[in-house]
Length: 140
Image (cartoon, rainbow, N blue to C red; front, side, top):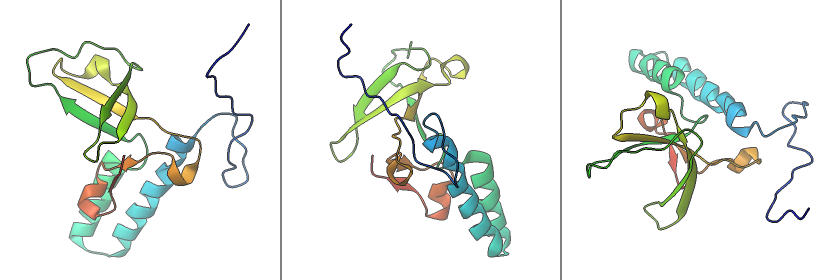
């Protein structure tokens, strides 16, 4: 048997002393949402509490996704985990997989961005509720 173009990772970055057996960078990124929530709560204003709640409810670092609307009359008929790609505003290819297909209208496609195994650079786009706090990242 010959395997071509197969990436195999024998170990992953440790997280607070724990060595995971699979890639958990996207799940681990919830700590970054927690950091933003704490910073907003520490401001002790009504608007910062609202922003903290928005980050809590909508996230931003973990499960980074784009919600696309199809406007040309074609329905988006693809199931969860279908790989898709596109080009961002700077001309760089962006790769992801379809997410929430069974609960989305036919004119919508939710795409979860592809992640890697390095926590510092696991995904290029982090928006969600972070746009309201100014902590968003859209480079990829």
